[in-house]
Length: 205
Image 1 (cartoon, rainbow, N blue to C red):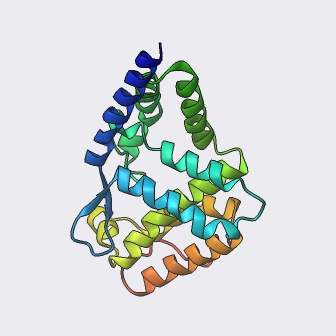
Image 2 (tube, one colour):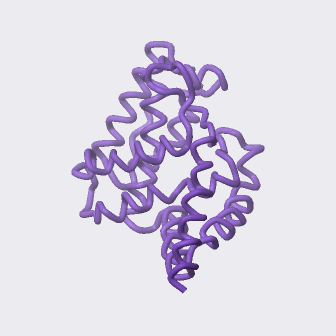
């Protein structure tokens, strides 16, 4: 039994190695190439160690890290869905549910259940930990775009109202990070990194 357990665990680890081949829309800060989903997952998990102090309520930081390490595993099968692509997002849930069942199903049942529960928690965004995980998941691409002078935003014709609508969830769990995000968006518009579709004077949520 133990041999089968280890074999299944190894199979899972090898399978999710393919997450390194899933290319996102965000460019690395030096703008020489786009990041992959595995790099993104590592980076946002590291952000928890740095930014946890800005949460509006106490967090289990270890759980936030677990959520972020697991949250994009489904992209191994489902691919990265660009948040501003309405055509791609309409069947996102169905594709990712199918991927979750297959990928987590490679693990022994007890581990499959635990990891799938983490993924479901992240998607539901009900707990403080899942809200903070989502906030960081939105903040990192904002930083990538700002420090590459809007490279990906410009390529896809993204406007400030779209970015605000996508990132406003940050305000649900961290007022300091939301204030920072809003000022970053405003500055991106002022510098010409991001198109201004509507006034940016709306109050933070």
